[in-house]
Image (cartoon, rainbow, N blue to C red):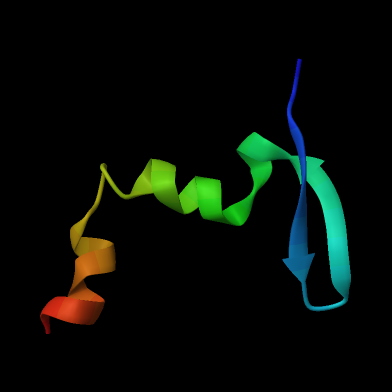
Length: 43
């Protein structure tokens, strides 16, 4: 059973599955390439 959520976008709010949220995608990619995120705060 997929969990449903709402994601705020430019035009409004869209209904989507939890796993498809942009924020969740970033959480998944961070462990693979932390330097891609840390470069913004490390220099």
